Image (tube, rainbow, N blue to C red; front, top):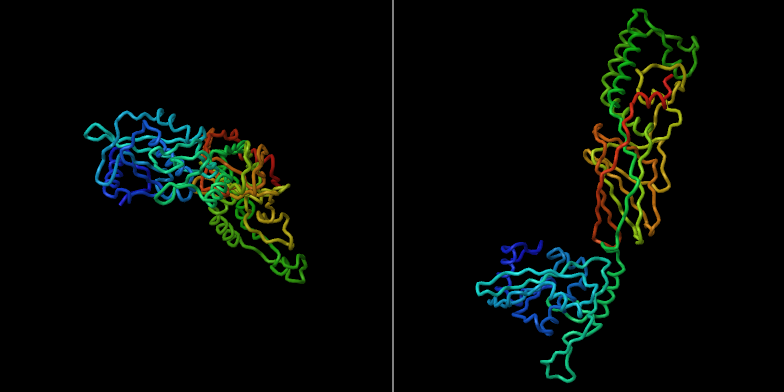
Length: 448
């Protein structure tokens, strides 16, 4: 059984292919494999056979070709069933390429050569054609060659100028109208060599080294103030009853006041402390989403119209939070106070609701956390040539995890409609200068 998951490699790999062909002979032939006996590559008729194979496999459909050898195709020269006569040594790639150019044309994607020495001093040649890709043009034959050995009149052509050859399951033949139509569709698809995406202006990547320390400190200060105000004195405090709170009135006749013991307040404090792990995480997310500027990037396609692009940008070693809109953030939005009953239906400061405050751009992007990375996804109907598109900066804010990092790695992957290809890139981008969390709180947050 022939392994076609990848192209053979090294003398062992090509030897296994040779053994398979020796056993199977012509039955080994497929859309990705052709077998020829001892060709004399110094003659035009035998060169024409190589050219016909190369033209045929270049005119395959990418998805069909990719099923075997990852799209590559191989012509084995000097082999038949049970015989490996080989060809004389000394076939040079550049000379063979030059001799085939008259048939293949100047825009042919090229081929490679591998060779396997035989004990008699000859060698088996493996001529390897590159995989076809979406966006490739059809490749016609550029010169004719008569079959001088043919006794028919007029002479048959080994190759015909202007003809388009395609490789079917076991033969290379002249293309039908349907073949031409499919190759035209392939040419109109977006191909790898047609894409040169630029990803610019990525950031900002914020750096707030002491954020966790400051948030914990603010919770500790809140704890100390609560204990100093309510628990360090034996005198009981008076609070409105539940009914009075519900009505928002301080009417003695509707239930009046009740006394709150130090023990009850201590219980409230302990419950509040038990929530710290969760509250610290929430405070961190709210800090990122409310007090740090939003993340954005710009993409440009320099010269190609791209239909339905999907771009994934991975920000390595980062965390993120949804951007929220709050023109007057209060400390209670970040540091939840110990729960206290109110004497009104409306508390002095409204509770924080990220979902209600979240804002969406006209063309939103999506994002998610993946391990220690942030993955940002852009999906659009199209990208027009030389027209920059900037992602909205109201979707997420990004913070580097390693406070000592001056740069982070970003990597991106692009896929587009009509192509099985993907295009990737990566680079290092600088982080923002580190900032003190307490300073940011003091500048942007109302404490009273």
